Length: 592
Image 1 (cartoon, rainbow, N blue to C red):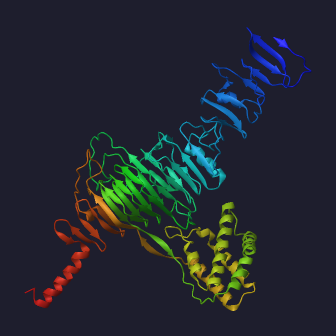
Image 2 (cartoon, rainbow, N blue to C red):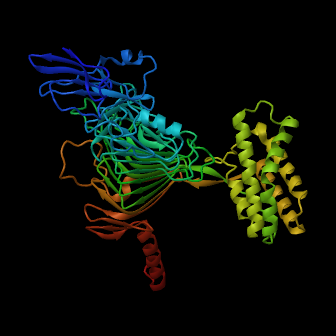
Image 3 (tube, rainbow, N blue to C red):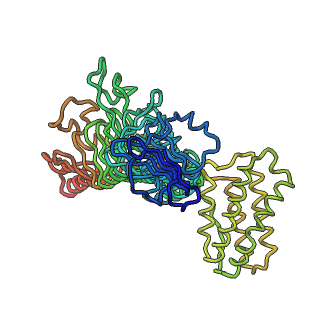
């Protein structure tokens, strides 16, 4: 060991340890430290380690031990024995050091989170591929807190879930196509998986081993559905996903009978791709609609798609296989299919039942377009809304109401004032009629309880009186009075009409109609029944379909059919043909 003069230059050696003339440890006057046998000093490093056959071993801690570190500063490094990652403290959280450098060596992408099977929900912040979360649920939790458009990128692998993953509005979930598998945790098989908000987009996932709760009125067991209470103003979209329920090797005592109750007794129930239930999302939703492209159910004895209670599904290039009911519209739901296909299974298109929808009261008044009146209404909108709420409170209408009631009251009154404004600007009562429509839920009931009817009626009177205090011309006042009477009539004496469930399938293809939900090996597979027999219209439900099957039989609009062996037929062909035959017989005496 040698010690030099402390008064020498900063770059000079202060303390040096040698072993057999090999330098092992050097301290410089500047305070820098070098470990190892090298004569070349790197002045940019305060600590330098040099070796050709050894490394640096960082402190090895468990996650619990790591969390016991008092006030860890950013830049502190440890090795986590539980996650097997070198970790660094960054921006107040522990993140993994990635394979190509520290997290952030490649800049994180704004509004983007990452998930991987090798990730961690506690050690990582999810902001880069090198610090991913371990679960989709954690990424969704952070996206919800952000309350902004967020893309969640999910790496390949198997992810287990309890389901009911509620995506916030404008959340985009991207999986590596055909390499991301979502499976239920034990006890969660009968759950909807992703429940989407407005503007959500999901692609690339394979959802396996979930099951429906019912084959007649399903509410759970679908890959995609609405988030409860979501206000849908921008249609959520599922793209290039698949739902799979593997066929068990054998079934003991099962009966393939689609007409039995339950259908196909003894056979396990499958799952479904999409459920659009108009009563699940908020009744303020403009578009209670889910759109899919290339989303495929391969689900033995399941239901491919279901729209109910005024919900709408737009499906493009959807191929449904082995389902008991491939596409089901019920209770006034609607499904629009473009270039879709049903293969094997039981019924192809099933439309059953109806719903009641609210009918707006006519606003009988002639309105002259008046932009000045519109400007006046717009300027005073906030004042009127605030005044209305204060008045409702002072008059005792809000007793027992909560914060949500105030929020909705302010929202409703603001929309009503805007509707009046647009009526005056445009010289048309269309906006008044549209406003009345949103007073009804998806099944034709008013969106508020009867206990609040008096408060609603009072609110429209109050706002009318406030409008009349403004500098408006006679026509504007008459229009406002007529609009007020119209909306009050709707809430006091609501009218409804029946809206049937409906499926529109254009350019559809059928393969192996009614072959059943169970088959050991295909192909070959031939239809057991004609196209029309696989279509059910029950209790007023409507199906409009065109297309052909794998045997060359075709179905045209108007229910005209072509049988590959016998020619044209169907109700749309036979009825007019029969009429003409009767007419000809009468004309030419053919009945004699």
